[in-house]
Length: 291
Image (cartoon, rainbow, N blue to C red; front, side):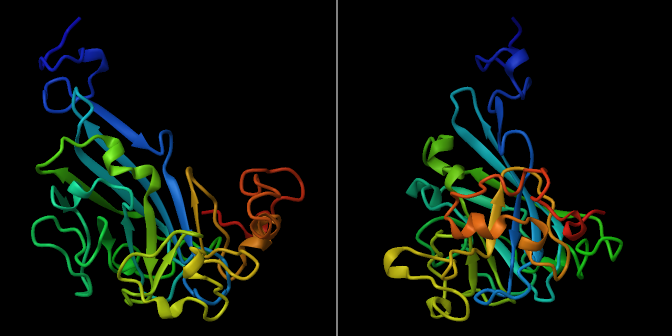
């Protein structure tokens, strides 16, 4: 069996046949791009259409023959922007090995508004206990207007940011040391770094302004680790490990996916297939965006 680069991995199994420092590409999600959707009027419900940012995402972790991480590519694709507000996006790695805080270099981000402070060496956000990467600080740099939210309305080509996280020392680190499976993505709203919006029950980063909790329709109780939910358990952000068809502008998500509210209020017990089931009574296709 051929092993052209002599790294101990045969050519047929090696994603980098002529590079002994790299061997495997590992994807998350494995088979498709995931989708994040946000409602940016938090802590109020707003129109609750969850299309203020529709963001595709996928991580590719490159490892060597010993399954040690060499680098990670995180691709984020702006698929729709239904927001009049100028929002930013980042993610935290809350379960990462502490050595990652000082032994990586992040490149590829889009920071144009002068509101993000990053470390001069790692380019991780400063003032954080865990690694935090700000991918972009203004959605309008990727999609400069309200696009792809009205069927037959204004459309724009998708644009992307590709974050490169290179291991520069320490370790060696395995994929488990980065713990991408427990990543913590968030929006920060209208150029206000402390107004973070996370997935339901995900903790904010150290730069969150906690005065937002318990205001408007939000019923977060930080003392009990209850975050980003209303009194009846409705969230403001959702994560799907595959492509997802979002609701059209000004149409609440529960008018497109007809069992969404029952699912949310039950705490994921009732209608757990609300977003994939195409049987009668599950969807109103009129309120689901199509290009």
